Amino acid sequence: MRTLYFDLDGTVVTGFGGVAKTLLAEGGFERAVRAAGCSRLVCVGNAVAIFQSLARMGQDHDGIGTVFRLCQGAFLDEAWLRSVLELTPIDPHRRVEGIDRGLDWLYVDDLAEQYCRDAGAEELFSAERGRRILRCDPEGDGQDVLAWLEEWKVA
Image 1 (cartoon, rainbow, N blue to C red):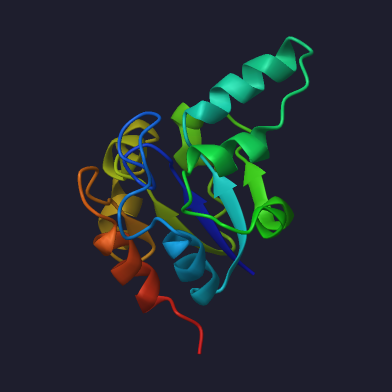
Image 2 (tube, helix red, strand yellow):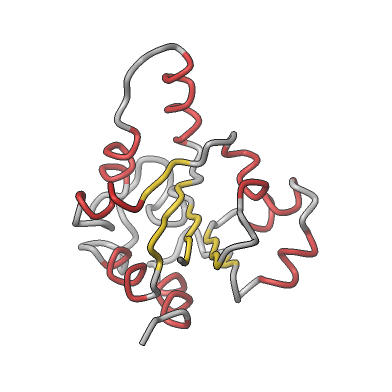
């Protein structure tokens, strides 16, 4: 089972609450993720911290539905997304610590280098950059994300 850990802002969408990156829109991200054989997704975006806060206050919140909406059309099949998506159980600022490196994993985040550094995982970033880790262009159209996922495409 291949797990994709992914950020939202600057990775799937442009800026906080922005629109889906051009090439990831209209289900482009979902198609690429599926083609890469990712059967488990973990959202590590900072928005998850808000959902965690709501849960601590006893408020019921549909975090997965919110992620679907925040992705602004990068995913089209909400039922599929609900069946494969988890929200990181730890503080998203510690997201790299939550990557299970004992599994087949991928991690895409415009701030991947920073979060690896914050976790004391600079060596991991250096070893896996461009392979298992993609520090995508926050201002890009998503071509870098699609090209990277294409390299993981399952025949």
